[in-house]
Image 1 (cartoon, helix red, strand yellow):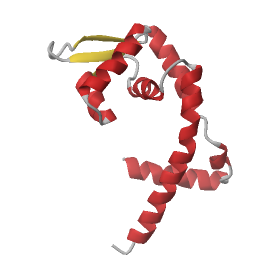
Image 2: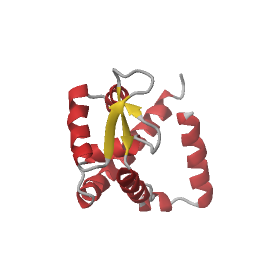
Image 3: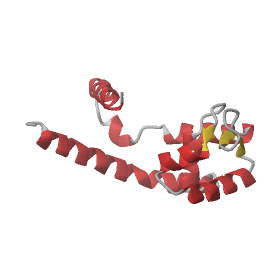
Image 4: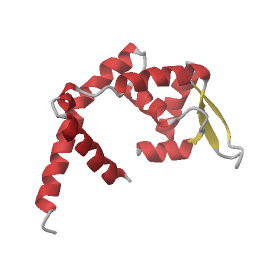
Length: 138
């Protein structure tokens, strides 16, 4: 495990980058009249791919009752719909409405713009970073 020192340093730097960019989300969420948690839920539900509420709670690492509150607010705005699963009617799944899909697309478009810090890297460095991060998540 001779690379532990470098792995720790890389992880610390990734965390610093992540937390430095977190400040972008609250103003964007406010502009879209959403909470950051609601933005996260919209990000996780892909159009036409219903997600069971329990799976969403697991992904968010929170209690199912917290998901219910988030879902209630998003549903009241007409952004998502809750319905029984076709595989198991006891399970409730969440799907985006057309309005929710449009808002999600706008949210992702705004969130996926790279921060200026990444633009400081050369094209070659950016390709290398993409290759390395891809290896980590596969």
